[in-house]
Each structure stands twice: as C-alpha cells, then as structure tokens.
Length: 247
Image (cartoon, rainbow, N blue to C red):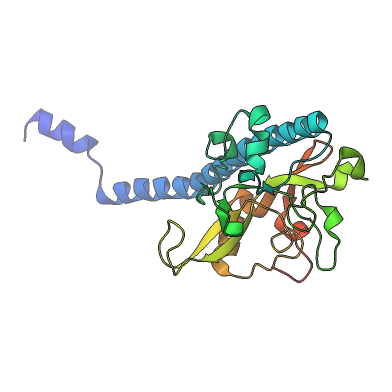
C-alpha cells in the first residue's frame, strides 16, 4: 500500500459514521421543515391581509363617492359584480393578483350570466346580503342584491362600523359539479364563495365536510382575514366566525 492509499484510508468515513451524519441531517430537517412551513404560511397571511386592506380601502372610497355601498350584483342593464364596482379604485379586476390569496388554491370565476352563487367564485367575499345567523334581518348587509335591490346602504346606516363585516377571505364550500356545468371535473368540488350572503355567511354556514375543513385550516391555519366597515382589518379564528356548535 502506497503512502497515498494510506492517507485516503485514514480520511474515509466508516458506515457507522455515515449513518450518524444521515441521522443528524434527518433530525435537523425535521426541526427546520415545520418552521419553514410556518414562515411560509405567515407570509401568505400577511400578503392576503394586505389584499383585504386594499380592497376595503377601495370599498370605502366607493361608499364616499357614491354615498352608498355597492350591490353584490346588479342585473340591469348588464350583469355587474361587486369587484366591477371597485375596479376604478382597486385598479384590479377579479382575476388579477389583488383578488388572489396565496393561501388558497380555489379557482377564480366571474360569469357574464347569473346562475346562482357559483357564478362568482374566488378567494374573497363581500357582505352583499348579511353577516348574521339564523333569524337575522337583511339589514345586517352592506349590499342586499336580492330582497331589496333598489335600496342602497349608506355609511350612516351602519350603526357600529367597527363591528360590521365588509369583506374578507371567502367562505369555502362544496359544489356539486356532476353535470359538468362548471369548468371543473365532474364531481363535488371545494371552492371559495364570493358573497357572504344569507346561506353562505360566516355565522351559520354549516361546514362539516372534511375536505372543506381541511381547506379552511390550510388557509392561514384556520383563520380569516376580515375587513370591517370602519376600514380596519382583523385576523379572526374560524371558531369565532361560526355559530357555536357548527363546524
């Protein structure tokens, strides 16, 4: 054996040493990966909250200019959704980055024809009907599009703006797409609802499907970014936005 061979042999790792190194790397990875996942989730939440703040500002500017809040949907003379009303202030359309939450992978759809709540799917929702539970009056809304389409809510009509939900992270629900009406696979799908209305509001919308709850928990770790009528935003836990006893 030459001197060079002996030198190489002295610097070679034994099998046990290699296994120890691999084990140490595995332990470090197990410690770092959850921290990296939390950091990524936090960055998504901050990005999303900034979106909600900008949309809420656009909503306030609209209310000041028109002396009323926009409707969630206007049917005549042409179909107009609430993102269309905010476009001149938000400088973004429904399919642009401002309306996309990085913590949610749901599709974004804005139909030119109305066929129910699935005609506007996305990552954020507007309180266009109400934000109350069972038995609440429709006056808890900012834009009642259906029961009172000609009545507009003024800023002065909101008695406690700091407690009035204006817009925020969309509700997540299930749609039966077995007929293939929507451009998705023919099955039940999980999507975001762009209206916080009578049957899809935060307080009283029963969500017990495991895939829906999983999507809620993956987006901001089970919390919602919510904007209020006075302009401030909050990060609120799923449990606080749901009727007690409902998932």
